[in-house]
Length: 407
Image (cartoon, rainbow, N blue to C red):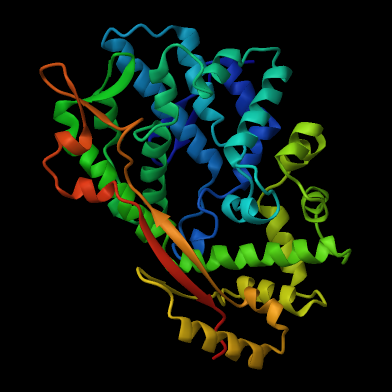
């Protein structure tokens, strides 16, 4: 069978699958599951076009890795074909541990286990299944390989993961401020002292990249209506989990049921393979099918929250740099008690506070280095004449007030 395929991608055009091993990994059920997990979770409720999947993103990141490897090889940096293939595999599988609506899932059904950790566990399973053919890819992914720059292309502040998701999320959402020149940035990559650096003439492209990332966070990823939808889903799963642990019968697929009726932690994944196998079967359809059915559930809170999500009657969200108005918060809780006839302990599903953080660039270890014409390295925040970059390295924390609308 010819396994050297091409895929037509709306962002880059044709993407090549250049090795039989990569083809077989893409065909594997672990990877095919990503077709059914949206890249941006609930964001389509604000930007209707944002319906692309993690499958799209993983292929796009692999394509950028192919371009970066070819470019670095053309500059005389020794990268073997085995290293090139392993790097492509590592970035192809970097998101394989994402669950449906990942951030909501990590807050509720799978506690204390990040999607990065689950990705590593799934990659270990794949390596067993493929008789150790992923050893080098795992070493690069885990930053245990001598050529550190290969890991930096996968996970860093200027990695190919970010380059792809900014362009892809911008393309599908229609928020053009997120577009960055990935081709130019890749062509200006170089290696200095074993680490990735950007040639001096690429300073302005990197500035644009960092600013685009900040804008995408505030306009897309942390848009207040996106937050409202994601928080609503979190509360739905919290209530479902609460009811399940009390023994209440809930409709759910076998995979989702396991995570509702069991307390699953990282230790659970380590003890046996069943939770990981069931996790690898979870996708958006498991969650949304349940939400649709739960609209008819006898529990008032669960059915109300689910109905609100399906009908897009989302929380009202107010975002502020300062503290939440305590007087307003208390008034909203009182209104909820009067309108919904619920117990005070159940208010958390209808009126609550939280916070969000955004930092576009982190200085220090792992920072973006600029290779100056004299051969020296400078942090982009130092090399740039853009005073705004210093502000981008500051964590911005905002407080949010979420409440159910009654009128």
